[in-house]
Amino acid sequence: MEQDSAQPPKYRHIGYGPIAAIIVTVSAFFGAQIIVGLLIGLLPAVMRWEIDRVEALLAESVPAKFLIILFVEVLTLWLLWLFVRSRKVTLKSIGLVRPEVRDISYAIVGYVAYFALFIAISIVAKAAVPGLDLNQEQEIGFSRGTSGGALWLVFASLVILPPVTEEIVMRGFLYTGLRNKLPKLAAAFITSVLFAAAHLQWGSGNALLWVAALDTFVLSMILVYLRDKTGSLWSPILVHMFKNGLAFVLLFIYKVV
Image (cartoon, rainbow, N blue to C red; front, side, top):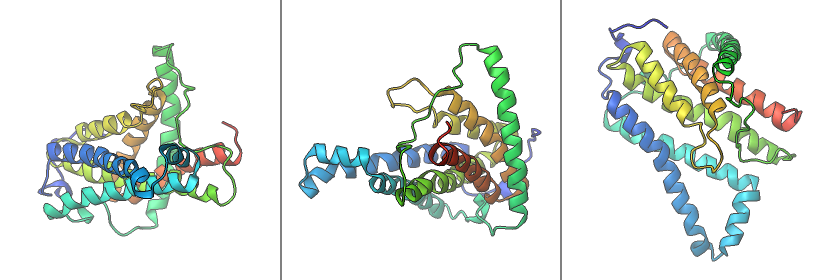
């Protein structure tokens, strides 16, 4: 991904720049979670339930977890949309264009490239930092024993909703704003660092998930390349779905990892 100082026409004069892109992205991400968290906090008073009942519902109910994820994702996009509309930014300018058949072929090549690159970088990282734990488990929020109809909700929660929302926010809105003023490599790097940082599992009470950060950084660099190459978010969305889909199959269908 060569570094260039000139911005192509598709990234010029879109109504916002790097600072606004970062502030709005972080604000929408955390704002949506805070709002949904406050609404959940009102459940005991509104429903006249005991706090223990609410906590049990959130911990054990797959439909409840799905609805929370859905609300957070929709609210994130809505907050982003408020800003986009206020700046008269078109959906096309952030990569939401009509899908094309070529998006599938680009996605397949992109997924293979991501997989190979992640393996190579993991080997190098392990050699450079012997203490790096590449076997850390990511908290996914759903029991691997989930079955039946509930499994479809898990599928939607992990394979459909996050790829769509995260690509619109990160490789769509954020990267476009960064590219308005910054060279390609700088914009790609900042986008990928922020995306990786969001997957460290801050506040979980567990050790920071460096393997997930490394994984998502590599993934993001490939997704940014596809976004730039095609001018569309569809290839990045498909690659992201392929990645999460494979993890879903291994975790919930074959239960091999």
